[in-house]
Image 1 (cartoon, helix red, strand yellow):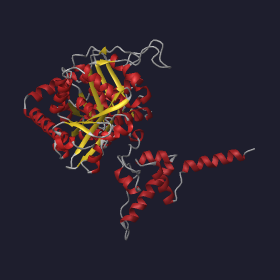
Image 2 (tube, one colour):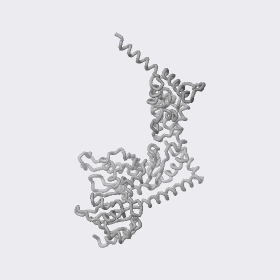
Image 3 (cartoon, one colour):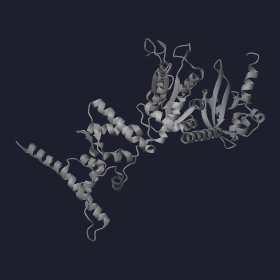
Image 4 (cartoon, helix red, strand yellow):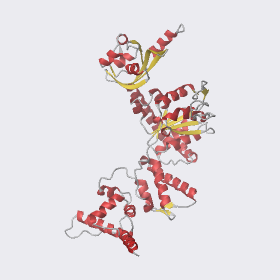
Length: 494
């Protein structure tokens, strides 16, 4: 060791914000940082005079992360409960010398501190949004947005604020964390952020972390040299991080990133270097990082599935994209954009019937923009003419299971009766009148349409519901009966 190494180590431990423990292989505590006393309820001297086994047995901390490292010989991250009633995220790493465990170094962070930081940041975000709403700059910036948003549809106040925030942070290299439900448009806004940035002439590398098998993740992200492993390409491979040189690296579904890759990604963010598999020479990389997730990353941290230090590195500029049901003003523009794409792709000029708009505007769209686009594409392809009607739109995807026929009928987005309901008969109850009207409507459709699927589309309910209703009223589809009779006659003919 160098002459001043011990003093340097002592300074790091004494001044660290995190709570450090240095533990011997037998569990005895060699040193702790001063801040640990407040979290674990014991003085620094008392902690250094005991062992992690005793602390765990006495309930001072449960479980001991250092004991888990001593048992497994591998790094560990877990959530602890302390005797003072606090929740702590603890990480511990083994220290080996000639393959012999000589110490365990652990650090922990009080989740109470994290929650206070999150609340403070949320307050700052609210104040920033209020400032935007109050200032004249919002109107000026919003007008400028119209010409700059390219393919994005931003009409609602919520999305305008999101777009304004992204445009203002775009010239920097700050990491942006995009949060929101699946399908809200995180990738589209990440691309727009790239177009607004000073790196717009560089590449935009879009990586879906959930789509790459864990066994291939490291080689895909960091690349490899020729011969790095048995199935390596002869010329090696440039990793996705290197491909983003001078541009933007967008990591979607960041919550699915394997822990081993999280460690290497954190090092790359901190140092600005990567090392390809099979290589010993680090390479400098220059890229802007944007990540997205539909998961609660802080919950993933508590479960030990996401590194706390990486979470801090990524959570620099968090931007939450609201679901489509909270910004219905954007639906018309999104619909027109999708219809335009489909018309250009297939060389047609189809449009929506006016009656369809009410259903599109009123639906909850739990799949958000992606679900809306998929429904429109299916309806466009199903329509024979140039007008897309309810029958092509079909039954919109249900957010709940079918609990009853009544519930389905009441929540159907576009019920279309075959004929007007009759007046209530003398001494007839409401239930009887409803059943009679339902039977009359179904009987008419059985003579008009040739399948239960066609009836379901007409009524805006599911096909199993149609089957149950026909069985309930003793009805059959006339055209199906005719086809059956013709088939029997044909088979009996000589």
